[in-house]
Length: 217
Image 1 (tube, rainbow, N blue to C red):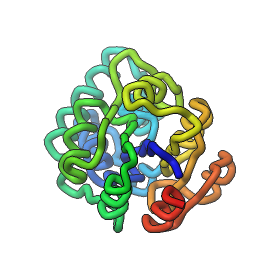
Image 2: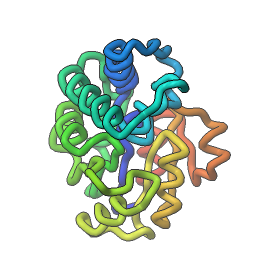
Image 3: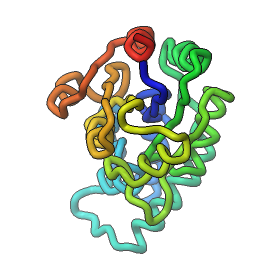
Image 4: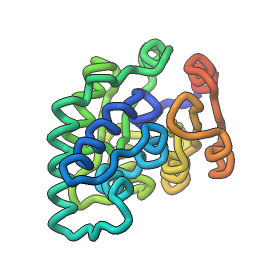
C-alpha cells in the first residue's frame, strides 16, 4: 500500500475545462482573436496559463513579452473571478479522497495552476482533505519538471518508493517519471487512454473506486 498520493488538479480532481475555456476566450475577445471551441481546450490546458494563452493566440500574432504579460494578467483576473462558475468535482472523487484520508494516507496536490488559484479551489471542493496543495510559482519550472514535485515530497516526508502520482495527461505521467514515482492515469479527465499508454503510465483507471482499490491494495 502507498503511504502518499499526489494528485494533479485540473482533469483529475476537478473538471475545470469550461471555466478555463471561458476565461481564455474572454481574453481572445479583448484582443479581437477568434474564440476557440471547448474541445480544443482538452489539449490547450495542462502546461500552465502562459502556455495556454500561447496556444489560443492566432498564429499570425506576435507574442511580445509585453503582450504575454498583459494576456496573463487579463486571464488571471477573469479566471479568479469566475473559477467556480461551472467547475465540478468528478463523480466519486470526493468520496475516494475521503476514504484515502481516513485510511491514514498523506494526500497532496501538485498543479500547474497558479498557486494563489490552486489552494482556494481545492479547499472549496475538497475541504480539509489534503495535507498540502502546491500550485505553480513565479520563476519555478512547471510540470513535468520535477522541481516542485521534489519540494512537495520533502515537505510531506514522501519518498519515490511509497508515493503514487495520479493525473490525466502525458504531463502528469512525465512528472512522475521525472521524479522516480509510480504513475496512475485516470480516464475521466481531459485526455485519452492512448495518450496515457503511449506515455507509459504504470496504471490506468476508469473510475474513482478503481483508484481507491489500487491504492489500498
